[in-house]
Image 1 (cartoon, rainbow, N blue to C red):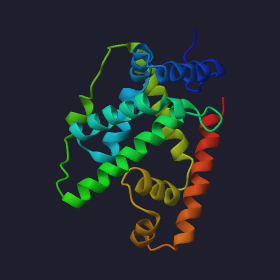
Image 2: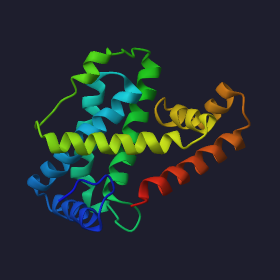
Image 3: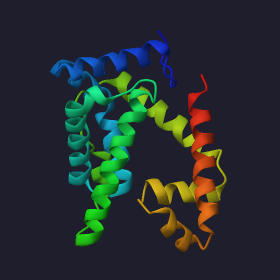
Image 4: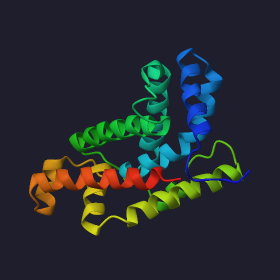
Amino acid sequence: MSLSTSKTNQQILEEAFLLVRISQQDESALGKLYDRYARIIYAFAFKSLENVEESEEIVIDVFAQVWRTANSYDPEKSRVDTWLFMIARSRILDRLRNLQRSSKKQTASREAYLQSPNTSPDPIEDVVISERRSVVLAALEQLTPKNRQILELAYYKGLSHQQISQVLNLPLGTVKSCIRLSLNKLRATLEKP
């Protein structure tokens, strides 16, 4: 069996079935989903928050919400990983807003990032994560520098469309169009087998 960075239909169905089991309060299903995505969500959160404790809290918040709301997942609307990252992004933006209001944002060193929690030292999982990261970075490289910068401001720094417009001195409509077109291009690139 070879490792692949794109999900097979079987993997997509397995993950959707895990959510059905989670909605029935199956803790082992939640554990499997956690093992599969906790490190990736942690890295995603750390990229925006630059704080170990805050990023760990995001992971906890995401899986607590999954436990509570698994029955609301609709496989017709999105894949499980997409749904998880939408929850994570929402939690990250909430946390960024709270940190900005209280202005107690602390930055963690690069070493802390490299020491991210590893629940199971599994070399296959490390390879899969590395491959996924490479695919996402390659997809981002296909965007123009301006579009990549706009996406990074929106998704990693949590800026609103209006704030991006002001920071980059671009019309609001241009910012919105760039985000929509860039996301569509990324989605098309990442969904290719």
